[in-house]
Amino acid sequence: MNIALTSQIKDLLSSPKKCVIIGHKNPDGDAVGSTLGLDLFLKSIGQNSQVVLPNDFPEFLKWLPYTDTVLNFEKQNQQAVKAIEQADVIFTLDFNSLSRVGDVQSSLEKSKAQFVMIDHHQQPDDYAFITYSDTKMGSTCEMIFHFIVALDGAQHITPQMATLLYTGIMTDTGSFRFASTTAVTHRVIASLMEHGAENAQIHQNIYDTNSTSRIKLLGIALDNLVVIEQYNTAYITISQKELDDNSFKKGDTEGFVNYALSVLGIVFAIIFIENKQENIVKISLRSKGDFSVNEFSRTHYNGGGHTNAAGGRSLLSLKETVTQFISILPDYKDVL
Ligand code: 5GP
Ligand code: MN
Image (cartoon, rainbow, N blue to C red; front, side, top):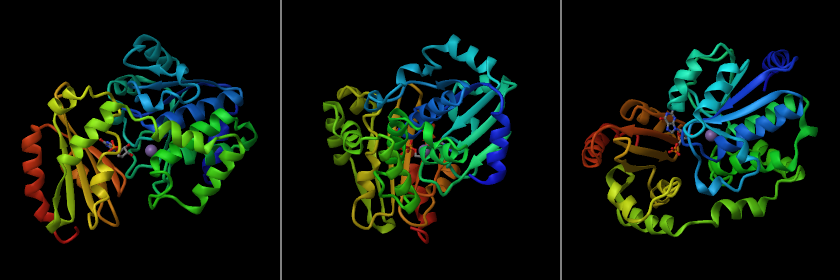
């Protein structure tokens, strides 16, 4: 975090404020880790702070420390709305557009609070009083670490905070293997271990806790995998019926798209997951190298994200979505 930003933040937090910290809808490890990590830090420097998440987060994150303090906007709506109304400062973490918070958006738009964005997604919207955006960062959790250090707060990092931040960095960097992982990332991780993050236990808690339904669904996803060699592209579909037949729970399909990307020669992978309740097809896109799935998703799926990882949605049926996808691939033949 640069000097100008640091002094702006120091000014803002020079007196006690009521802070609310928001993460994106369908929070992932980075969203939960960064919001709770920042919350614990703000409290340690005498600020009043509350995390609000738009909806529930998946089972595989429930072991994380301090998650019982989160207000779930869907389930604890009145309390969450009140916290937002009374906030002096609202930190928005791990998203680049207010449309990413679902139903929380209207509460945020009514708020008179000063907004602080901390995020690593591309093309951030310009809604915040202070914007700390760094698209080179592999995770918002890494940014929270730099934020804490810039505010001379490293001595406040407890094992709980270290665990939260370690987890978000680990999940957003694919366990430190994506191109966004830098030497600095590894130094941050080393420091978090020194502050009490237990690396082997965290990996086990996240990756060795698969439910039977998830493994069954993985089998179906792999069975449904289609490779289009001509365009170095692979896609996976999962229908609502396949989800229902296998007792799908939130988070069960997390990471499936990476199997499509792991096929030799594939540079573009995509998964289409039918969601009849929301009447959409949820889409996750991944790539290797320069092919920007952020751009692809912005153009076709009303979404976005990063160059190599993005999300979006389609309002067509699952079948139509796939047909349309296949029909636009030739437009990208030069870049795939
Ligand atoms: P996932 O495929 O895991 O849902 O998302 C991949 C990345 O893209 C994550 O960093 C996520 O925050 C981001 N992302 C997912 N959906 C959207 C979207 O609709 N808009 C934007 N701007 N980013 C998204
Ligand atoms: Mn993130």
